[in-house]
Image (cartoon, rainbow, N blue to C red; front, side):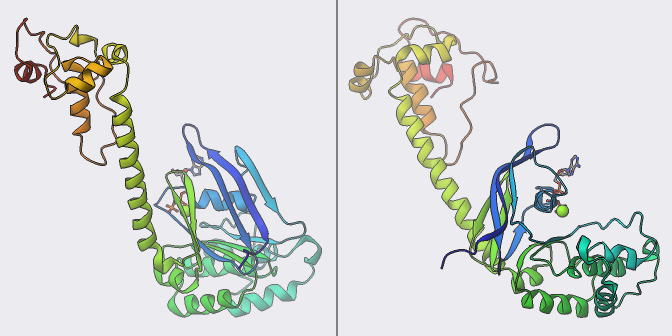
Length: 321
Ligand SMILES: Nc1ncnc2c1ncn2[C@@H]1O[C@H](COP(=O)(O)OP(=O)(O)OP(=O)(O)O)[C@@H](O)[C@H]1O
Ligand SMILES: [Mg+2]
């Protein structure tokens, strides 16, 4: 089935706070009927990405699309009640500009969430402030809801009430939550923010760990393949490149050993260079580090062997064996 037309979408989005980008080249979209969760480690940038979708942060690169006329409601991880004398004042901000006179809708949603609209928001408990923030998100009949940790501080009956509301919601939904049961019940699609990029799957959160293991396995296989390719290509490097990379070896003291001779002769490699390539080939699978550069190496500088040293003795002396 074709994915729903996006109500809001990001294309090639990047955000940087100071040094390295927090994320880069992010594409994602939320359509009608979507119920996606955004997961990732603490500090990976989930809240920041959601703020970009909500229009609270302007990205350093890329574009943010919102279907003309669409209503996007955002529940922040930490609600800010600054400038609101009462709960009612805060919730009414969730109504579109041309519907501000429909105060009865504020009363109705506060009634459902059991918060007194006359309270001063600075005096609210954690649960009351979360319910107040939810009321502001729900009151405007949005097309898309972006909810950052909606179940924080909520008691079980309120979480169950919220789950039913969200299951009945026909718009697009993006959830960030550490509440696994909540995500298992609601998320039909999973977006994983990892190492600065977003991966997406049409599997629900219940299958996240299986999917994550598959992704890591595929990455390891690709890295192993790349290692093999690099190793194989290094064998064909012209001799001058290796001498440049390892000038301390100087001219090789030995002709190639019999086992290596055909290849070494073809490529004009010396025994010393060949042993170095062999040592690279013995790195364990998955070791993606570059070989240590001569300058960075802690290996004692190799003594140049005297003329006539055997190949095994020379390799032991240089540490390439
Ligand atoms: N306005 C800002 N200025 C500088 N750095 C910021 C700003 N906002 C967020 N960060 C940094 O960006 C990183 C990601 O923060 P963010 O809150 O988006 O992560 P998160 O994935 O939501 O984390 P958590 O799971 O703990 O809620 C953090 O290291 C945070 O300190
Ligand atoms: Mg966060």
